[in-house]
Length: 72
Image (cartoon, rainbow, N blue to C red; front, top):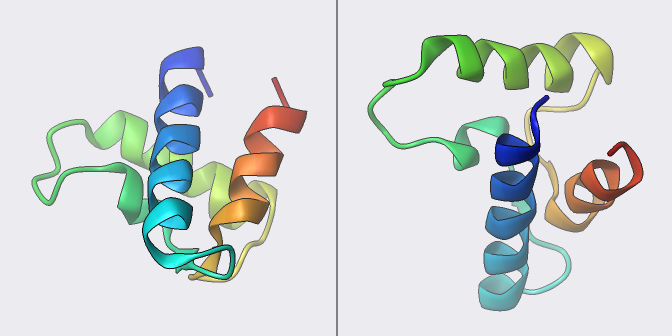
């Protein structure tokens, strides 16, 4: 994934953690608007989430954030 989406994912994770605590979960849809205006990027993130890492539908935001930081 490119640097822009990685930064967006970290930002969303930080926001969710700040609002709901360290145990908050989220899905990859949390990084996109309700309107699917970038299907290629959505599929890229979905592929990373589902195929590459075989993550559950909901994962801890802290885990996803750390994965983004570790895989620069």
